Image (cartoon, rainbow, N blue to C red; front, side, top):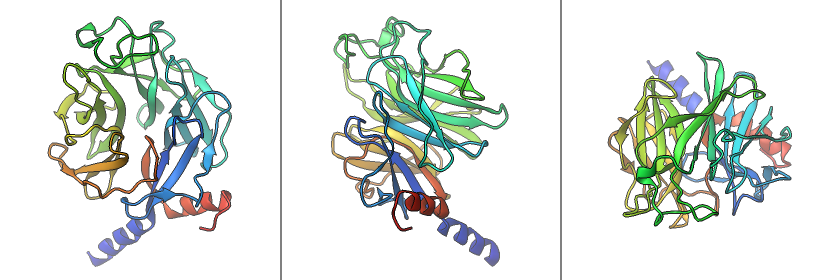
Length: 311
C-alpha cells in the first residue's frame, strides 16, 4: 500500500499543467504557459513568446492534442467570420508544419462563423474528431433573436455544435451536427472521466435574459447523444472558453471571466455539484481561451530549452 501511494506521489510530482492561450485578438500567435500546482500559470519562458504565428488570419482559441502518431495536433479559430478552421502538426510543440485551412462549414453556405475548434481522438474508431460552434442562418429559428449578438452582416448569432472526423488530416467526413441543447451555445470541450464523456460549453444566450454561463452534459459515446447534467455550473458572472482537466481528485474546469479580466475555475467529483474556486486561479495577464493539459515535466523542460530558456 505504501509503495503504491509513493509511486502515485512520484508520478504526480513528475507532472505539470501546460496551457495554450492567445493574446489580444489572436494576431500574435499561439503561446504556452505552465503551472506547478494548477493554480498559478506563467509563460513557459520569461517573455510571452509564440510557438506559432500564421501569415494569414488570426490564431484564436488554440487547442492541442497529442495523438497516437506521436505528434501534437493544434486547431484554432482563424477569423471572426467565415466557414474555415485551421490546423497544424508538430513533434515537439515548437516546430510546426505550415497550417492547413479546412472549409469545415463549406457545405452550409449561409454560415456566419466557425469558432473555437477542439480536437480529440477515438481509439476504438482510430480517428480524430474536430468540433466547434457555428451559426447557420435560417436554422434553429426558435432561438434566433435580433436583440441578441449579431454577425458582421447584422444577422442573429445562434450557434450550435458541429463536428467532422478524419484519420489522416487530408480527407474529412461531411460535417454534422454534434448537439443542439436548445439554446445558443459556443466553446464546447470534451473530457472522458470515469468511462463517461462530458461536454462542457457556454450558454451564449443574450436576450431576452442573458445567460453567459457554463454547463455540462454527458454521453456514453464521444459524439453523443448528450443529456444535460448541470446548467449552470458557474456563478453569476459572464465567462467563456472552458477547458477541463482530470486532476486525479476530480474534474477542474478552467475558464475566462472575460468581463472581470481574470480566469476562474470550478471543481466537482460527481459532475452535478460544483465548487467555485473564486480568485484562486492566476493566469498569464491578458491570456485568453486555450487548452490546459497535465503533461510530463520533461516535455516542458524540452520546450524551454528549444525556446532558449533554462529548464
